[in-house]
Amino acid sequence: MKLWGGRFTKEENRLVHKFNESLSFDQRFYAQDIRGSIAHVTMLAACGIITDNEKETIIKTLNEIKEEIDSGKLVFGNEAEDIHSFVEAELISRTGDTGKKLHTGRSRNDQVALDMRLYTRDVIDELAVLETDLLKELYALMEKNLDTYMPGFTHLQKAQPVTLAHHLGAYFEMFIRDRSRLKDTRERMNYCPLGGGALAGTTYPLDRELTASLLDFNGPTLNSMDSVSDRDYLLELLSDLSITMMHLSRFCEEVIMWNSNEYRFIELDDAYSTGSSIMPQKKNPDIAELIRGKCGRVYGHLMALLTTMKGLPLAYNKDMQEDKEGAFDAMDTVCDCLALFTDMLKTITVNKENMENSAKNGFTNATDAADWLVKNGVPFRDAHGIIGRLVLLCIEKDISLDELPLEEYKKISPVFNEEIYDAIAMKTCVDKRNTIGAPGRKAMEKVLEKYKDLIS
Ligand code: ARG
Image 1 (cartoon, rainbow, N blue to C red):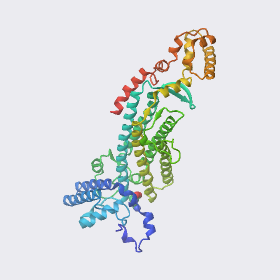
Image 2 (image 1 turned 90 degrees about the vertical axis):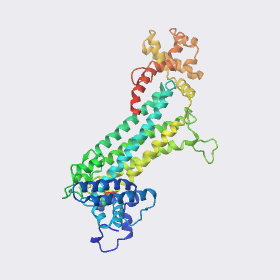
Image 3 (image 1 turned 45 degrees about the vertical axis):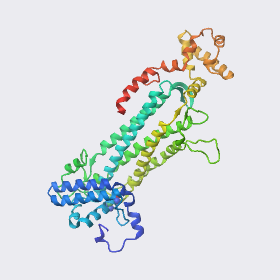
């Protein structure tokens, strides 16, 4: 059934219907559509626009329709243009003239604006839970790896020793920011557009405050033209999601490297790796690679919607129907990636020894060795030169600084004594760095204490 059939005489061309319809993808927010309609009729009755009996009949039937869709008893045919028309037509077929009153004082323009907001708000709440699960997992890994020494890198060259806890802590910070960005977006979008009508409000004495509070919004939106044409909140969400994907992608890149034969810092569980059809030795980190790869489609959806919105005159235009598929795909993708990534982290094996050896073999303690000389009276520039020569010697012998015998140290500078070995031990190098934010155990423990509240 066409809601606007009266004005049209010719049978709608099939291709036009297929091109124009949105039911195939907006059916996913049927629950939000029905929730919005129930709030709308509750408000209509409270304002005396429909009777209490009519309200009861409509709500009862809408709830039945929802249950039947939930259970699969009622299926979406391909007749209706969108979910709004589908639900309304179904209501009218069951309740006749009473059902025809549902759309009083409402347009599909403010209805779709409401439904998409309700749906997006629900997904944001789901995303916040997934982000918190990830933060909890990272926290647990950090607690376990306060003394798992590893090289910290700059330019992908081994630089100074850190710990795995400290490295993971950098991601913890990123995901905390991601979660708070989502919270900001939710706060800003949490105003109810219903009552905006087609674009210019309505002549019915609607109580928009009531509708807004029934749907847990902070209040009604304040400009009816903006109510039906604002998609900023989706752009904000897509931008938040793009940043989260970028963070996940960077993390996955490291997981992929650390899991490689060259690094062997971690080992991924079999469930998160796959074999090769030809090379028997392979255990590929497919899941991490796919998460990294899916970053592109989320960025793409952000660009697509920005471009769709650019140049649209006020108020509603059908172009805006294009906001949905990309946004849904981005939401699905990020929910899946967060859940999978968290599970993957839960099952990794950390190879502490390899991490620490890699830090030693990369001379990440060279700065600390120079600092030791400085403390023993050698000017820094000279100390830098002395350690440089020692590093060269170690490279020739293919050993690390702590494997070099004391005589060799002394040959290059008589200042050296036994204490040098303690000074360049990974534990010493890391634990001396105790300003807040640094990798030293004491500093990390303070930070972990602060994080506790954020994940409870
Ligand atoms: N399916 C439409 C959308 O998603 C609903 C609003 C239709 N309004 C209209 N005037 N054609 O944007």
